[in-house]
Image (cartoon, rainbow, N blue to C red; front, side, top):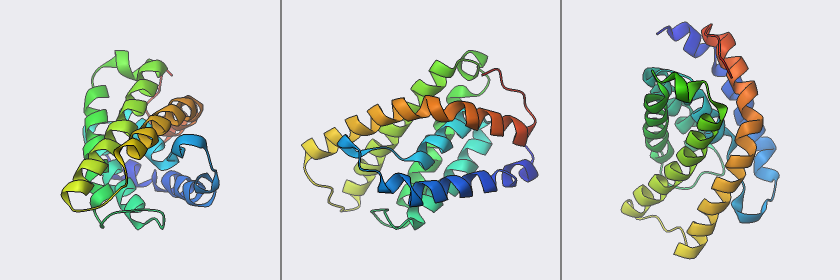
Amino acid sequence: MSFRNFFSSAPVFLIVIVLQEGFVTQIKLPLGGFNLLLIVALIWAALSTPEIGALTGFATGLAMDLSQTSVGPMGHWTLVMIIACYVIAFLGYGDDNIRANPVNIVFLTTMGVVLAQVVFVILGLLLGEEYGSTQGIFWLLVGSGFWTAIVSPLVLKVVAFIHSRVFGVSSRL
């Protein structure tokens, strides 16, 4: 693994952070909307090795913790993103059937987003956070899964292209 390649992906994520904070958070969609940084991080992890996935999860989780729209204590999103990105990268690593099929990556990303948010809520409840009613949380999770399933195919081709240029690995997507 080359850390030079990993750090050369930083401008990509900085652009995504600016888009998330400046544009996506301003969009009011029914059932909660989506998190572009979470989607891009999980797609990036699905195309990477588990080590790169964990590092990507750390960097994006730290950015999500520093976000003005973040709820919860510092480090909460970092822990969740390290786990989510590592698991997604581990599931996709070594299996070309998953990496070569865009439908599988979209499915992994959508399930990863929903499960990461479930883990975030569970850990938040263990830390004493209050998130509202169970019905409200359920509908936010459903909406997040729905919007992620719509947005991730649109983002997948761009992220796969940039990932192949940064790491020098050709993608069959």
